[in-house]
Amino acid sequence: MEFSTELISTVAELFKQAIVEAVARHPESKIADLEQGLRQLLKQVGAQALATSLTALEEQYPQAQVACPCGSLADYQFRRTAKTLTVFSWVAYRRAYYLCSHCHRGQCPLDQRFGLEPGKVSAGLAPLLALAGVETAFEEGCQLVERFLLLEVSDNTLRKETQTFGQLQAQAEQTWQAQSQDPQHLQERLRSQPAHPKRLYGSMDGTHVPIGEEWRELKAGSWYEVEKVRSASGQGVGELDELRAKNISYYCDIAEAETFGELLWATGVPRAADLAEEIIFLGDGAAWIWNLVERNFPHAVQIVDWYHAVEYLTPIAEAAFGANSPQGKDWLEAVRTDLWEGRVDQVIIACQVFEKQAGEAARKAVIYYTHNARRMDYARFRAAGYQIGSGTIESGCKQIATQRLKRSGARWTLEGARMTAKARAAWLSGQWNQLAAQRAALPLAT
Image (cartoon, rainbow, N blue to C red; front, side):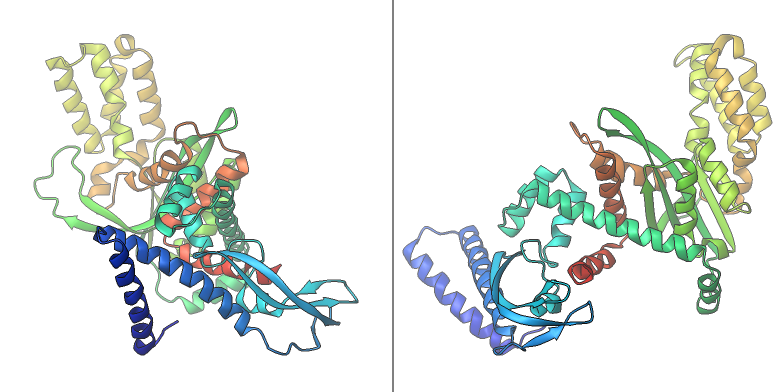
């Protein structure tokens, strides 16, 4: 919505006069006082202008009847006052109210026209409240909203809008699931999407979050591409190419592995993961991750994160040689080099030698490397230009779970955690505008 420069100049002149008069009454005013005063004035003017505009946009002479969704006609009753919470504050307006004698359903055409839901948050304010809710604790979010918008809202209002956005994301995922199983949709996609990704990455991980008095695993996944931002010249053992993730999208849920596998496939189809020339999956050694990859993308390149792989060696060196001993450092460097070059058999033998001295640490390492040997061909992976670190999904888990769900003192209901996590994942994935558009249509759909 745009306004003429003449109108802006006229309004600005009125505001200037108000500010000059206010400063005359308070000569000690500083620039911060002027800014804050102007913000408060804009808020009050905006609320009044929105209220009078809504009333003015109503027909002066309401129709006697309007169509009812049941198929009958609803009769005009009277003008009814309503309030809605907007970015300016609560705004009251009057509009025509109709009642259907057949189904007894009431309606207000003005509310339907502008997507207004009396007594609730407006479509303009909702995305801002939900954004505060995905960024920080609800109580703290209310304080930020008050600072930024000069608007007092309750933590329950903030929570509701945040989780509404999570529900909208869950609905989008259900749509993707249905489309990913629909042959007609998949065939149409082939015709309309001739260019397929050359190289697409997928990654999954899990982290535990507080649900009531227990901890549950939040599973998270990401789809992304990579770009090289630095030459690998002079690269040493364990120094990875500077491959930076781009076009990242996240998904998450607190669900069993099989259910999460459906989400893996459903989110992959919109990214054309099934059509990619190459698809590379990165993860730690969790069995559920690789089982889902095998089931959904059996031709994918599977890579165990380098940092997870190498972390099994230090406990063995410390147990066998002592912490920070020269012999332990020499052993660790030699075995790291073997692992870096993809000589996993040599790594396994080196760990087996110290099973008596290192005990459980050595046995765990042998099992880990044996089960994941084909996923640790790091020399070949590096030669192919693949990313071998799973930092993208680990960052996603930190941003979704650690920074939001695992804040000090946090205790969630299962549904509250799921919906807040999904809303935050949507924000991190650049899908906020789509959710905001869906949220704006909610009153019209009810």
